[in-house]
Length: 243
Image 1 (tube, rainbow, N blue to C red):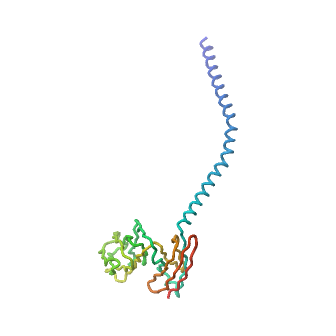
Image 2 (cartoon, rainbow, N blue to C red):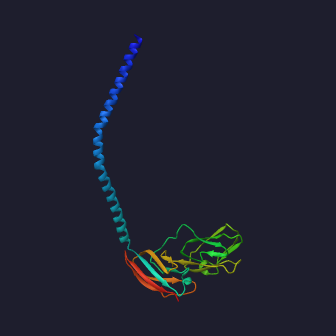
């Protein structure tokens, strides 16, 4: 009797569980077509949503650029020898705005008895870190008033000493331990400058609308200044001849 009652009880549990699973399966099958329909309708809607967002973002950026009135200066520099193009800097002489110097420091390294880079253009107020990467001691000083005639002293490999350039002009950088070492820091009024490439090309993007004077700086040669007018969304081309 006990085995019979136990068997009936197990049968009822098994039958009840099977009915529950059957109901769940029927419910899933009935909902499945609806889910597919939702997916079918939602997919195009999602595509349209993201496409609209992309177009809106691009339109906003374009409108912002137009509102700001930014243009580009592209130029070429000619010289009798390509070596004279090295370390040549193109820059706008003056832009009627106040510019905050970058928080990040610029760097001039002393490596293999050489200042690297030899020519460094910076915005007024920028701090330059002078690093010694040689095994010998180096000194850094400038005899120019632009750099307050600073002398940072002498230090060993791995050490860095900073100086902030707060005056406009060109500062020569020297080492009194090694008299052949020489570099230049160009302290400029605005951030619109560029280093000339070895092929003579350069580009200064993001320039506000207006009339400006474009200059070249070269250690040995000179070039005539150019007067240009920058228009929003346009590229202005200039050509220099180093002599």
